[in-house]
Length: 223
Image (tube, rainbow, N blue to C red; front, side):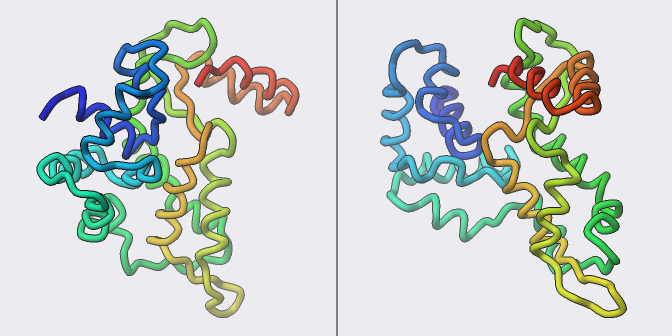
């Protein structure tokens, strides 16, 4: 497999990069995305295919990309997605939690949500390779940080739309649908950023200081 082509396909289908972002990743300047677009056309991919493998692990994405490379056929990606659902969500299938509130449900799966986000964004963190705070060149220990909404808030919002009334004030939560919604919510722009420990701690400090201080801090995070 050509490494350049694989890099383009992976970051287009999983990370949702635009062709301009992909060309920049490849080291090209002022191409308007034409270099990457030629690769996408070669494998019969369209702009609407961008991010379709977002829910998939890097390993499973690689396997699907190998299929795409072997058989260059229009619409083949959608066929593969139907045949191979995301493995990292399958363990939640046919599982429910009964709890008195969305917050209680989150408390049960708090560690699970932290781990899945850490693992899910690890390849992108390695690709970026450094703290995204302006002028920070730290390439040491980099943390995955929620930029717009925090992890509990995103999970609770998803839990609210994936529950049924049980009895005695209790609710029945669908774990699979909630976790799928939770991950999909991270596909939106500026959901996650990567910061060194110093700026990660400063981020949380600004959260406590107030909205204006936090807003000013966020302006210095470069995406």
